[in-house]
Image (tube, rainbow, N blue to C red):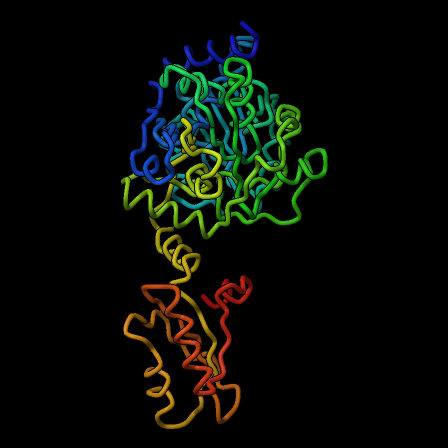
Length: 415
C-alpha cells in the first residue's frame, strides 16, 4: 500500500467511532436527464452536515497521538469547519476556542455551540475573516494552543480523503468521473490524492463559485494568488486564496477541468434539489450538481459521482435564493421607469403588462422633476420571452425605462 492510501484507509476506520459512512445514492432524476449513471456522495448527511468533520477529527487525532497532553485547540471559521472542530472537541474531551467574525449569523453560532457543548468557547472578533484569522493565530501563539487549519494541513487533507475511500467501497468499483467542489482545496486534494493511487483511470471535474475562483486563478498564475474580491454568497467555498499545500497537490489539474458556477445559477440548482429530490443543500453543497449541464457531453454513458459537500442552509435565506434563481432564469426583472406625472399614466403603463406578467415590487424612488417621477418596478412572469413583448410595448409607447436586473451595484442598493 502507498503511504497516502494507507493513511486514508486508517483514517476512515478511525472515523467509524464517530459516525457511519455517508450514503452514496444513485440519483434517477439526474441520471435520466444526462444519460449517465449519476451518484451523489451525501456529505450533507454527516452529523455536522458537511465533510469538514472528517479533516478536523483526523487532525485532532494525529495531534493527540503525538502529544497526549495537548488539550487546547483553536480554529477560525464562520461555518462548517467551526462545527466540525466543535464536534471533534467534544468527542476527544478537549477544549476548543473557536474564533468567528462578528458578522456570523446567529444560527451558525448556535449550531456550533450545540455540537461543542461545554468543550468549546466561541470568540466573536473581526468584521472580516482575515481579521478573525489573525486574532486566532495570535491567541495560539500566546497560549501554546494547536491551530486547526481548515484545509492547508496534511492531516486535514488525509481526513477528507476518507470520502474517496468510502466511494470506492460503496460503489464496489472505480467511478469514471468524480465531480468535486473547490474552496481552499482540502477536499479536492484528499479525494484526488487517494483515487489517483487506487483508481488511476478515474477522471476529475472541478467546480468553484464564479465569485471565488481561487483554483482557476492559481492555475493561471502558476501558484496561489489572493483574489482582489470574493463574492461571499457561496460561503462554504468562497476562499480568496488556494492553500499552498493544497496547490502542490493540485498543480497537475488542467484549466479545462475547472468550471466556474455563477452564483445565481447555483440558486436554481438548490431549488431544484429541494423541490424535486427533497435534498437540502447549501450553496457550496450544490456546486457539483450545478455544473452537470456544462459537462454533459463528457459524462454521457459514464458512472459519475458528485460530492454534495454540505447542507448547512439557513431557510431564512430561501427568499434570496428564490429571487436569484428567478433572475438567472430570466423570469424576474427590475426596471427603473420614468413615469409621466399626469392622470392616466399609471393605467397606461399597467395596460402594457401581459396576461402572465405580475408586479412584485412597485416603489416611487423620488420626483426627479415636476413632470416625471422615478419608479422602481419588479416584474415576475412565467416565461422569459414575455419580457421581449413587454419592453416592446413600452418602446412603442415611448416610455423611458432602464433594465437594472444585472446591475450588481444598483440591485444591491435598491432591492
